[in-house]
Length: 206
Ligand code: AMP
Image (tube, rainbow, N blue to C red; front, side):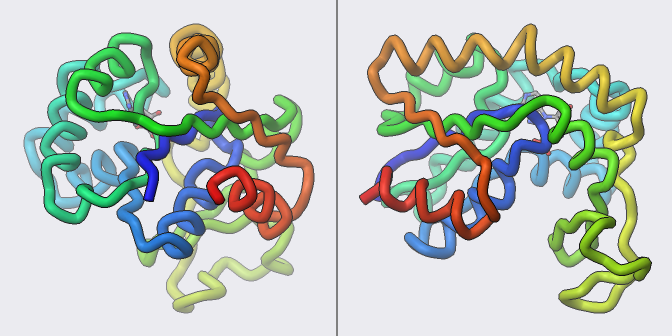
């Protein structure tokens, strides 16, 4: 299986599609956002540091996330491919990644900005890992998968969403050109349902 990088603005559906890829091809789904949030929940030193950036919609410093990913990719389950979700987010991170890994394909999920804003502002998440949108909940506030109460990620609040989108444009969008220059970029127009978009991704991977 391939070593995959997922690109796309916050809310483009990287996490959802990464989870589907991981399941379909039995590879680990490595999300730096999830790792950082887990550290925040567990009250680690790393979590405290990360929280101060995440709550502002800013990026956690490169050296911190690069260290996390290098350790994670050295685990045995990452030897036969993986899907990296939310990393790299800067050119410096991409260059550091190239020193420790060989990326086969970068999948860029393309979604209009107005859709992104709607998605992020209506996103609800659960401790079990489920993510859904208010529009699909029929007024309910519990997780359709496990029944626990859903909550809004702190960084999905409107002011923070704006900051995250600015950070994306400035620091992360240049990665599209970075992987295009390497000849490994594939753009996926995410205009369909989750399932339809995933079919497009599968075609690219097979
Ligand atoms: P995500 O769940 O991928 O949207 O990440 C949530 C937040 O975690 C981001 O807004 C950043 O503050 C932080 N974060 C996640 N991945 C990275 C990364 N590769 N570099 C810097 N900060 C990150």
